[in-house]
Length: 66
Image (cartoon, rainbow, N blue to C red; front, side, top):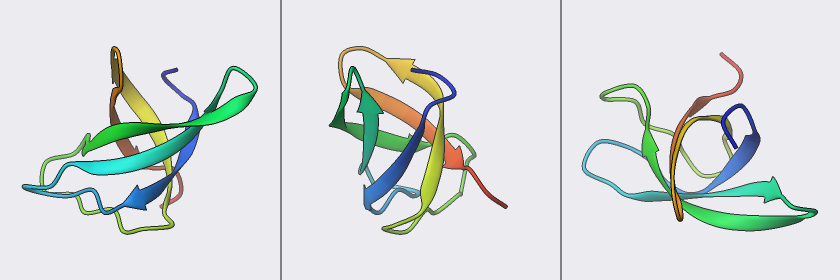
């Protein structure tokens, strides 16, 4: 899971629990998402990389492209 790319479907940022879609096991699944970097805000549509995974459905993400 760590290192996988996904797309933000619900804004991720300070004080927010966002949502990302990540391709796993031959399909796409939604995960609750938090920003890996304090204060980082990731808007809907941003391509992100998973930096940490906490089962069952929580990920920490950062922008895949800077």
